[in-house]
Length: 283
Image (cartoon, rainbow, N blue to C red; front, top):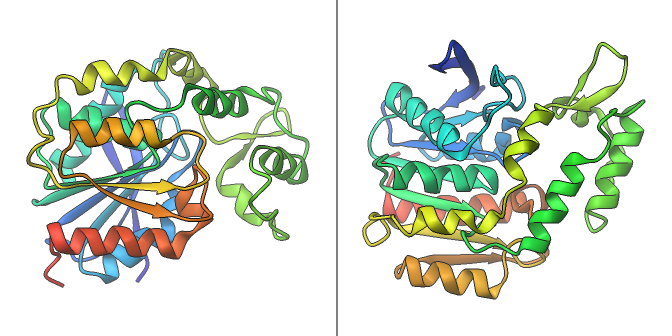
């Protein structure tokens, strides 16, 4: 089962790249990756969702991967939420579930709070009350190396320094999906560096948005937490429990903030088991 790549208009003359897979009229799951990643981080999850009977939409966030960049370099969360709503309006069936990691998870939270009707939500290692130290570490990594890398080895070294617990891959060809070769002959991350301007604020600002949420008592929600995460701690989980009383939590041992990449099979299993209970695919 090979996904089909499409482009989805989101306004301002821009389009987002997305892979779709699974029965076209089945309940829909939209996958949103983390900041600095691309839709390829969800490749295996998308296929397993499709095999489980869901229609999966796996998209590159604005400014990432093969999606267009904002003309003015502006990437506020409200705009990202509007993008997600546009994808749901034009391509998703109902019922609809959102699965979002880090930035993709915040986008899902904001979209739901702004009125996007969803039947289920999966947050991947992200909570409104995140650890500021961990968020700053992510921002520092994304802001480093503004002049890019001379080769894939240098990029792999940067990733290994950020996440030394993950084995350094011997085959670096997969990095091509996260890097682009610039006109300067150097490799750059496959996202718009200007978006860092919208990621410099206090990440706890999402708390103000969540204070207006009216869906938290009716939408089944799963938090998948990496037990080695430097973004989500017990305080953040407790805060999310207060906001979503029926919250479920799946703790993935041995995984850090990039849960799906660290423990892919365990992650996929937890997500699909949850979705089949709260939003059965019928497949």
